Length: 169
Image (cartoon, rainbow, N blue to C red; front, side, top):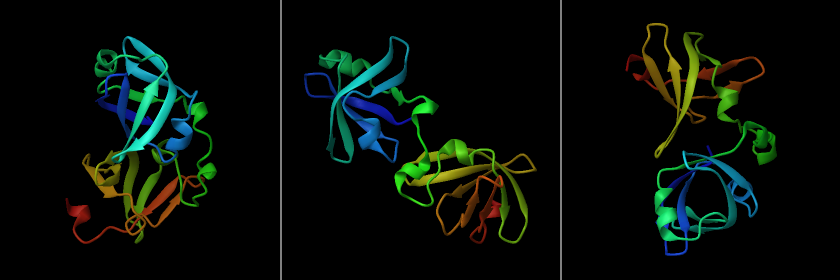
């Protein structure tokens, strides 16, 4: 998922998009085709995009009227996994795709086995790692360097440095 249509903007079919990608300039470039989860609109092609109040305003080639844009509210904007490229393209040494993280086995820095990462939750306050504990509970760990100091997809592991009380939640 690279974005979420928040609402229509203006009268000419432009929509406000909540961005869910680290490379919006690539994902919302003119001519880019995005897939959707909308039952009547399987794909959309970006005609224009511009930043506005912490979101992107996007015009799609297929949408020219406000009522059509309003019907897209809540639609997820997606790319094919093959379009994602490498996280190394981001010029960030600690960049991973969610698919690189899900399935890694988490342990504490003290060697306590926590369980596999089942999801990366993208919340408004930041990203969280969902870890399936052996006892069946789910542990949510803020995905920040202080709490997750080491991620090694090649080894299939990541280390968690939990603050006091996190493991008891």
